[in-house]
Image 1 (cartoon, rainbow, N blue to C red):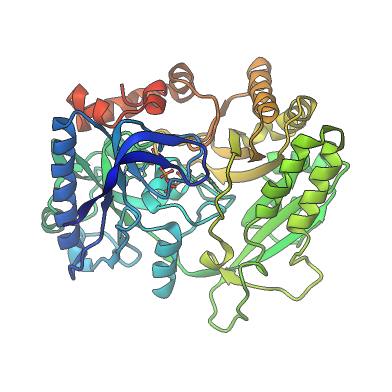
Image 2 (cartoon, rainbow, N blue to C red; image 1 turned 180 degrees about the vertical axis):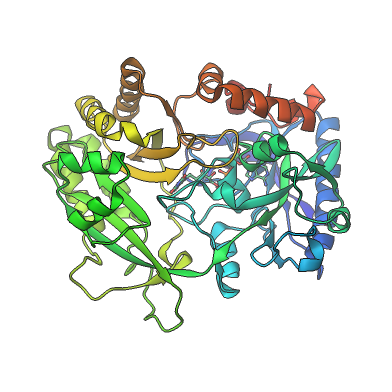
Length: 503
Ligand SMILES: Cc1cc2nc3c(=O)[nH]c(=O)nc-3n(C[C@H](O)[C@H](O)[C@H](O)COP(=O)(O)OP(=O)(O)OC[C@H]3O[C@@H](n4cnc5c(N)ncnc54)[C@H](O)[C@@H]3O)c2cc1C
C-alpha cells in the first residue's frame, strides 16, 4: 500500500521551524518495488487519487510536502491532511522505445516526486549525466524545488524547473500526464503510468512551477546534460562600484578577470555586507565549467566551497549588538568563507553535484529576495544596501545571476535576472528593513518579483500585478486542470488562498 497513515492528528513543524500545521493528520507516500517505473507510478498515482477522494469526503484540505524547506509557509496548512512524499523517491531510466518519434531519450530520467535533488543528481552522475543548475543546497525534493522556481547562479541557465519535460499530476477527478503540445512520451508509456495525456503548452508551463496549487505531483520526467566538471574560485575581495556596471551589462568576463580568473565564468555569486558594501570585502564565488575527465583529483564539498551555514548562525549576534552590526557581519563573513580555493592555490575540481551540500535545519530563519532585471543592478544595488542597512537589516545580501526561467509563474521573468537575497536570522528589524527595501523599489519604479518560498510579503493583488498576462494564463490552465471549485479549494491553504492561487 503506497500511502500509510502516520500516527494521530497533531502538530507538524516545517524543517526550519518557520511554521506549524495544527491538527494535521499525516500520511506518507512510499515507493514500492516494481521493476518498471511506469508500473510503480501507476500504483502510486491510483492510491493518491483514492486518498484525495477520501479527503474530499472527510471535508479536509490536503497539503503535499517535499522536504518542508520553504520558509514562506507555502508548505503549511492547519486542520488538513498532510502527504509526506520524501520516501517516494525512486528514479528510473527511459528507453528510446518509450518516447514519441523524434524525441532523444538519452538524457531523460523518470523521477518519483519525493526524490531529493541530491538523489537525482547522484543517479544522473552515475550515468555520465548532470543537472545543469540547481539551488545552493540540494536537500529539497525535486517536485518541491520546482514548485517554487529554485535556482542558483548559473548565468546562462534558468531555474531547476527548466529540467522538467513531463509531469504526472493527480487530482480527485483524474491522473493527468502533462507535456508540451509537441509531446514527449508515447501513448503506450503514458497509459502504463495510469494517466491520461494532456499535451498543452500553457498547462505544461503552469505545471512546471505550480506553487503547490495544482494537485499532487507524483512523477516527473527530468532532462539532463552530459556530466561536466566545475572549477570553483572563492575569495574575499573589495568590489569596486564600477564593477557593478560590468555585471549589469553582462560583462562577466571583465568581472572575473578583475577578481578571479581571466576566463568566461559560468557562475558568479557575490555576498556583500550591506554596511559599506564597497569598503568591506565581499565573498565572491566563481565556477568555471570544463569538459568531464575521469582522472580529476577528488575534493570534499568543503574543499569545493559548498555551503555557508556559519554566516547564518553568527548572524544572530547582529541583532543583539546593533552598534557593531557592520563589523560583526564582516567577522561572520570571514569565518564562514575564508577557506578558498582562491586563484593562487592549485585548482580543485568537482562535478555539479559534488559542489553542493545539504543544509542543517536553522530555527527562526529569515529568507527574502527580490529578482530584478539585471540591467537595473548598478542603480538598484546601492539603493537596496542603503535602505536595508539604514533600517537595521541584519543579514548579508547575496547577488546571483540567471537567465529567464521556464514556467508561467517563474520569478526570473526578465531576459537576464539579478536575484538579490536577504538570508539570515529572523528579527522584526530585519523584516522591517526588507519591507522598506520593497517600498523603495516601488517608489523608484524598479520592477521586481519575489521568491515563492521566501517570506516576501506577497499578496494576491501583487501577484496579479507582477505576473500580469502570465498569471491569467496560469489561472486559466489551473481551471482546465481543476474545473470544480471544490477541488481547487482542496489544495488551498491560508497562505495560498492569500496569494490568489487556490481561490
Ligand atoms: C537553507 C535553504 C537554502 C535554500 N537555497 C535556495 C537556493 O539556493 N535557491 C532557491 O531558489 N531557493 C532556495 N531555497 C528555497 C527552497 O529551494 C524552496 O523552499 C523549495 O521549494 C524547497 O523544496 P521542498 O522539497 O522542501 O518543498 P516544500 O517546502 O516541502 O514545498 C514547497 C511547495 O511545494 C509543494 N509540494 C511539495 N511537493 C509536492 C508534490 N509532490 N506535489 C505537489 N506539491 C508539492 C508544497 O505543498 C509547497 O507548497 C532554500 C531554502 C532553504 C531553507
